[in-house]
Structure formats: structure tokens, C-alpha cells
Length: 170
Image (cartoon, rainbow, N blue to C red):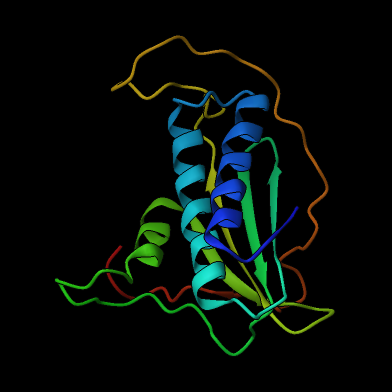
């Protein structure tokens, strides 16, 4: 989906991800829903804050397979690449990619193939129960439903993807 490159657009994108995951059988209070929604929040906030070009929207794609969920956020700013790194202890921002790095099983970026910009993506592997287990801190019952397998709008093929560096603490 396409969203305005504003804080409101980022908020709507995050809510859409949570809602769609719930529809796919990952309840709002499940660890999978909460994790993927938080990753979506960080990636969309970065697209709005660092990838914004006046008059241009950002795109969000959420795809699911039997074993993983993938979120992709595409903006139109190719020259500003995400770089996680140490932040000032009293800084008010700069920790979003550290969260993505800690929560996602894999993440990276790829150039936008047909226009200026980039796609930042993250993947979360589903646990053996399919990711339907609820967050034990909130309790509740788990419901089981198959995860649809939509066709991804942009893949990691052809060497166009740059993954995060292997070195450094996680």
C-alpha cells in the first residue's frame, strides 16, 4: 500500500500491519503481531523522517509464507541509507534500527529498481506454532488459521540486496 510521507501515514501503516496480521491468524496480543508491528513502526518512521521527499509517498508491503513474515518499506530517497550504530546515551532518536536489528531475523536494503529510492526490508521467521502463541504477559487464547502466501512485490534476488554486516553485537 501507499501512504503519505507524514507521521499520520506512518501511524496508519503500522495499524494496517497489525490488523492484517490479526486477519492472517496472528492475534493482536501475539508475540508475532507485536514484533512485526514494532518493526513496521520503526521502518515507516524512518521512511517519513529520513526518506521523505516533498510530494512523494512511501510504500509498504507485508508478505507471508509458511515460515516467515516479510515487511518492506520503500521511500524515494536513495542517498540517505540506513546505518545502525551507537547513539548518544541522552539522544532522543537513532535507536530504531537497533530495535529492528534485535527483533528481525534478517534485514537489509535494496535499491528501488524502477525509480529513485530504496527499499528497507525485514524478515521474521515464525516459530514452530506458526507464530500464533499469545504474549504470556497479556494472556488469552490462541487461535489457529492458515497464513496466506501473497506474491511479494519486490524480492531479494539478483544480488541487489545489501544485508546488514555480520560483525557487531546483536
